[in-house]
Amino acid sequence: MIFKDRSSLIRLSQGHLNLIATCPPRFQQIYLEQLHSPLNPEQQEKQTWGTRFHLLMQQRELGLPLESLLIEEPELHHSLAALIKAAPEILLPARDIRAAEHSRTLSFNNYLLTVIYDLLIVNKEAAKILDWKTYLKPPNKKKLANNWQTRLYMYVLAETSDYLPEQISFTYWFVKLPHQPQSLTFTYNSQQHQQNKQDLAELLNQLDRWLDDYQNKEIPFPHRVNCETNCPYHQFFLSSEESKNQSETSNLITEIEEIPI
Ligand code: SF4
Image (tube, rainbow, N blue to C red; front, top):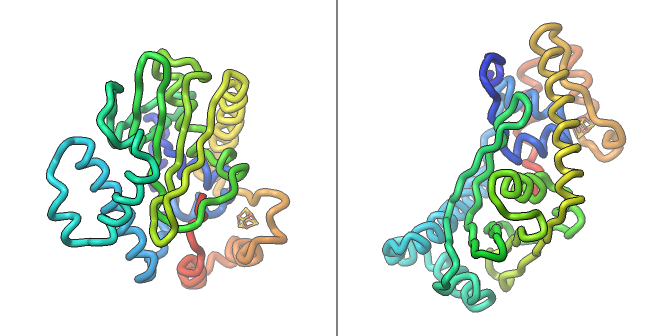
């Protein structure tokens, strides 16, 4: 259980926040009870490809040789070439300061909020966060705007730098072939920043209460309202909470896919 010791600050990423916001029972299972589902071969392959693409982009930023990666996986080469063609301005050397896999941490109440920017490009006027997405289909823009990756990444940068919210933007690049690379860009402002602060405080207050209930009173994390009708495993979680049937839980979890952003 990663949260057993409450005497130290708890580290949370955007993935944790998304799960707390959408499905507290799954957060409990995955992060408190360590009930991870094994990836199927297709998921494993996608994850490996995504990891290699991120490594390629990081090595490129650091000026390290890329040949071995590109020779091993021609598809990486094609995706990189397509991205350079679609967005030469972000990939060509410039006067801006650039940092790949740049990590920042912000203390917020009892938590440490952690972000890792695939690429951060800054100059005197602006700070641009870029993120490589290696699955095929971009989600709709409204859904992505509400995702905690978008919100947290800009929030943490505004809180940990001298940039005003209005100087910060966040662009997702969807880079997996056969589609041409597509991007979605979000701008930021002071009003959104205040809203994010308020929503973060509310979400983490809920987490405080649920952790306390779970650890001290053995009360499971609650379901969200208004998602039961679209939830294939709501009934399962309810009966599982009653029966505590471990083997059924394992079987179900293998069928639950990660919620993509
Ligand atoms: S109804 Fe389903 S999606 Fe909603 S909180 Fe419960 S298990 Fe999660």
